Image (cartoon, rainbow, N blue to C red):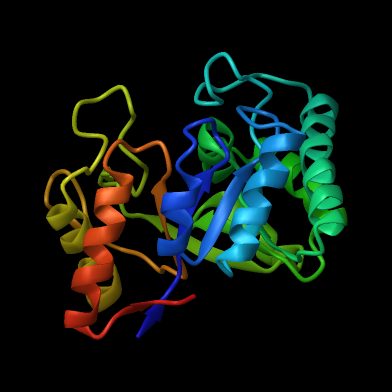
Length: 244
């Protein structure tokens, strides 16, 4: 079995040279929570060298809080800021002669698109002009997934390797101690539930249904490199290959 592992990058950590050879797609910050023209271009070049698919990773325009807090913006302002970020990304990708594979919202915007119909519809309106031939990475059974399907936007269901889940399918808030999975063995166990059983084991040991076309690990997770190296060593033992 081949799987896609994606990673959030271009966020100022500077570990892309190490991470990108170990993944198959990446989400590049494009100015909202992190990133600028130089960082976008640099990461695209690294991705191109490693044959890693690239995606735009727009956020609420909030570098101070890294896009991890909800911002209440008018529909017009939200659409404008998303389009500004995505447009910049597409321009640079074209200049570097690389096709954009997907778009994925970041942080609080990602979570709000999953649960808030107004935010989801604004996000979709913003990206529709850029959606031809690309995927939208979304959580399984989320509002934005349902609305994207209605509007003919191609989606890929995403699950998180380095995050714990609540019983309702939402991610455990980062403010809580058990939000992150940083032990490589725990991550592998988490991944095998998703792949082999189509389930996610929650913090209360409840098994909930999921569909997973791509699996995310955050580039700013302290043990991201250690986790990815471990998965590369262990996944072949389960006849699983990261698709590069």
